[in-house]
Length: 116
Image (cartoon, rainbow, N blue to C red):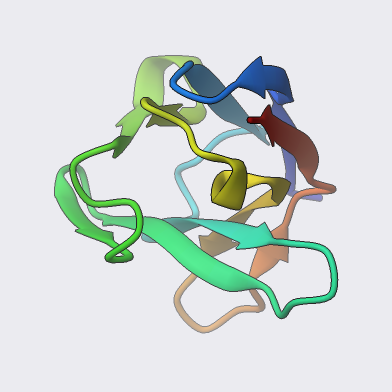
């Protein structure tokens, strides 16, 4: 059974950086796209960044210029580099993998808290 496990969240001051990781088990090979989503308290889950294939990326307006999504197939890992964090970036971050002709797979989430 394919699983995605996130890590790298934590508490950081505004202006700081974090790098989130999403490890696919047993591998990423069955997926054709990945997304990082954020769910802030009391709000719906929203797409923050997406990568399709090896390099095609897409970002929410709030993430452009600050966040970067990438993948390392050798490490079966999707990354979200987050720079210049602001309190509005606070939330639980989820990794989602999309597969052709099959259900999406979600990770369990990792908490990011940005203090002002």
